[in-house]
Image (cartoon, rainbow, N blue to C red; front, side, top):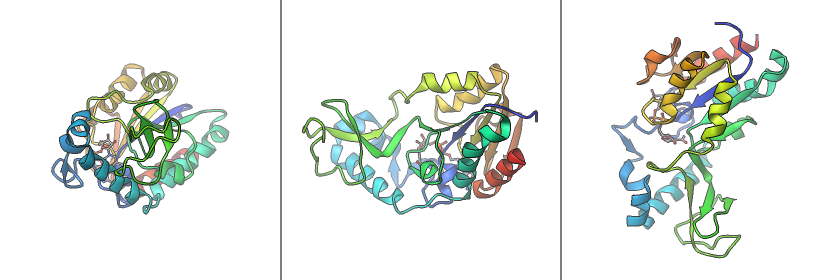
Amino acid sequence: MRRPRNIVILTGAGISAESGIDTFRGAGGLWENHRVEDVATPDAFARDPELVLRFYDMRREAIQTREPNAAHIALARLDREWAARSGGGEVLIVTQNVDDLHERGGALNVLHMHGEHLSVWCGACDERHRWVGALLHRPPCPACGEAALRPDIVWFGEVPYRMDDIYQALAAADLFVSIGTSGAVYPAAGFVRTARELGLQTLELNLERSQGSAWFEETRLGPATQIVPEWVEELLR
Ligand code: NAD
């Protein structure tokens, strides 16, 4: 591959799997024993808010007991060192993950396109707040006092965050890398196609070939904790 300057990295649940956070589709399309339609849609929240809030309260609590793994730490190193190594190049980590393991691994430029477990969003005043506790007991919004907080998660049927920023970053990049994502959830699954149309180099790092694998110029298979540090090492060499 030619030496890149600006790099956009898309990560999915697979990068956090070895930290002990379940992937989405891994277990027969169930997420932690729940059907997606029952916990990750606006309809589900309207129908059974207690089930949805309890589900996200458990996930929010669980991720705080997990630690970043070697793959998160390697990407954070790339993020911090790339500008100096490449003469001013940029790295953007676009993650579909709602955990905070990239940040706790030390990464600075992380865009959470599907929201974050440790953030809540008020349906009354539209403010967002960092949140580590529970929502089931319907606590008041710190800004407006209304009991209208929901997980700051982009549910199926909702529009992912900061799509304009992502497409702008792709347009300015030379290399698109996809790590630990199944290529099943759009619009993220379409980024590789956009990248190819824009003439970027494309690389997939995954445990097994993703649904969009044929779009990538190069695919490397293996556990993220092994192949991501190897790739970063190669790039920084
Ligand atoms: P996915 O679960 O659909 O796919 C996971 C992918 O990771 C698969 O292709 C699998 O082969 C690969 N994988 C599994 N273990 C791996 C490992 N050790 N190393 C490298 N690759 C590995 O995940 P997705 O594509 O991210 O899409 C699912 C949606 O689920 C996303 O929208 C995301 O918001 C949500 N989700 C997030 C988390 C999280 O925040 N950690 C966890 C589960 C689901």
